Length: 449
Ligand code: HEM
Image (cartoon, rainbow, N blue to C red; front, side, top):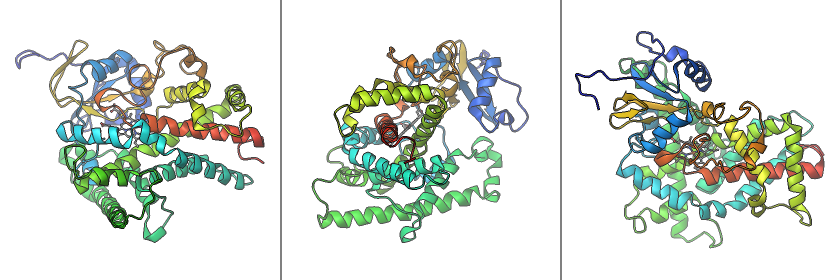
């Protein structure tokens, strides 16, 4: 690495303004604005969000360099005061800084909450909630249906049942869970000026950000405490039936003493992990569903082909089940194509370098934040023929998968900080699309009897 006397070679940067740096160039859809900028400044460019240097990676090679070759260096997350406020000082997996604590809770998540076996055990939840959604659409088919609302309600119900064992309807027992979660997701997307221009931190007191964060954190904490307490009492009285699939609260309470894992889980950690599942598992999933439905309606040819696949598989059966998903190559291709064009987390989660590192020929200082533009990479003409065309067939004879090994398709990120919820996330839309299409087949239209 260059000594202090040598000048660092930094990636190209668009001209910045005083104080705000390049913030004015982000626009309302930063992945699109950054994609445009990268066409001029290249696959690695250095922007400044306020005073903070932020590297933008927009090519397969840049993504591979960061998430594979130098994965360890980039395994930190930048500090976020909103995440600190909402997630018990970032004690969850997503925002926790790299280190022993993160390693421990990530392994709890991977081995105990999101393992294949655990995801399989929630099959009845996915099937029931999807069936409820189809019934709801059918009942309301005479009026205009807000598909986003219906889909987000369903994914919310699924994650809620898996996470804390039941759904909470609006206002039930005075609990505005849905409103709190919506607010948390809104806050997660808020650009927090104090994190980027530290001397403007005081603005958050005036613009209400600090009090919004405090209010949601307090409400959710009271809610989670009541859920956990209720469960502790229920478990003491052994009131649950042995056949029931355990939800995340049960699993976490079972391992909290550390006998199985080698480390005890504090109460705040337990609550942060429950919140992580709510935050990570709702919006991202229904966005994939919504885009897939949109693309199927825009492309009747693709829809017809999907129906044909299901018709062949369904021959001689009363219904197609999750077991059949394994054989649905076209459905898999449809979902991959939706994820390629419409990555729900288009810039992944920010990562931060823990030491100085060389990328391409550039010298990147320690504590640089990086955003990887998965959305732009999914549309790179160097990797994809006709990148703007929705064409699931491109995946039929290809080994490219979304698991983080093929850097041209990284909707779930890759490497140490890659998404541990892939199986969960892929299973849900697969089941729902399959359900929607088969019900449509029988009834002749999405919800039209
Ligand atoms: C289609 C749905 C989903 C998408 C597109 C998605 C995408 C992502 C992305 C892009 C990241 C950041 C990866 C990186 O920084 O390299 C991430 C991290 C994470 N995701 Fe997902 N995710 C989805 C569903 C889920 C679900 C259902 C769960 C759990 C119930 C989950 C749990 C997590 C967690 C805990 C992390 C943080 C990992 C870490 O920092 O170590 N995700 N996800």
